[in-house]
Amino acid sequence: MSFGYQVLGFGGSGTAASTGNDNGIFGFGYLSGPVAMTNLISNVGVASTDVTGVGTARYAPAACEYGGDKGIFAYGETDVKVSMSNLVSNTGVVASDVTGVGTARYKLKACAYGEDKGIFAYGSISVPSPVSLSMSNLVSNVGVIGTDVSGVGTDRYAPASCEYGGDKGIFAYGNDQSPNNMLNLSNLVSNVGVIGTDVTGVGTARSAPAACAYGGDKGIVGYGSNPSPLNMSNLVSNVGVVGTDVSGVGTAKRQLAACEYGGDKGIFGYGSAPSPVNNTNLVTNVGVVGTDVTGVGTGRDELAACSYN
Image (cartoon, rainbow, N blue to C red; front, side):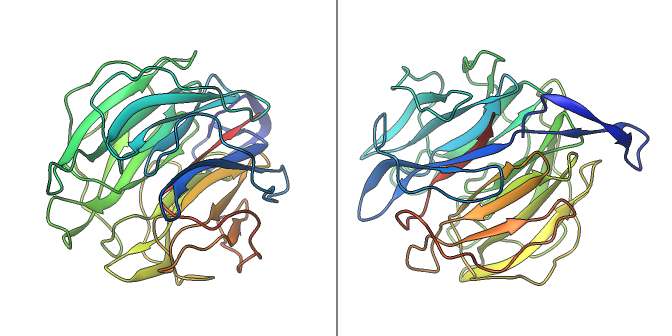
């Protein structure tokens, strides 16, 4: 989540609670092949109908916020791994392809940090068996992706990531190079974009969950696979501590996406259960996941999402 302004009041840590963007966007994905469509999320968590895609159709990209009120989709798979990116304006308009920087890969994740920048990390280059990575690429406050940074932490693909603490991030869970070796470790991202070493995981090891911030300074990881679809969640505190499993609400699914909306709430959407679905689940500003909301737009999986505005 990007943090454009501060609200009055203080959290338990003694720092001002921050609030973020009002709207979200789900984009790209897979349904009998790569797609480029998007669905906008309103400031009350309502998904729009499909918007005709801009940019190269692909699946398993990642997305995050940058610049306080804008977003970026990058990387993914067409018939080959790509490193291109597409900027999202502060009105939710997706721009055409930008020539990629860094190693082409898919099944990575991204989050914001430092209030106006972003980071893409981990993923797989699949040549031909899964080869997992731990490299990262920083995104400037004007949406420019930097060159590869040597990875920290266990190589993996299909983790989840989100912001916490107002200006930091976390990558958690995922899968290493063995197809059924799910992980539950995490790695914190500092407010200058440095990824920390592995932190012993809490909760059920799994692959292909999603995560988003909520409440201004906390995060939530939800759903995933081990190896069947799950519907549990784990809250992330405002100091980056992952909590124990919370019994799931809604349809168990994997390969979904999540983002913030309404300044302090979140939404999980789409994914595979195991067939593609288009339902959503709203997250309150205290981290409670709601029941399924009838889907809008094309059901698909291996998509990405971020907030804007």
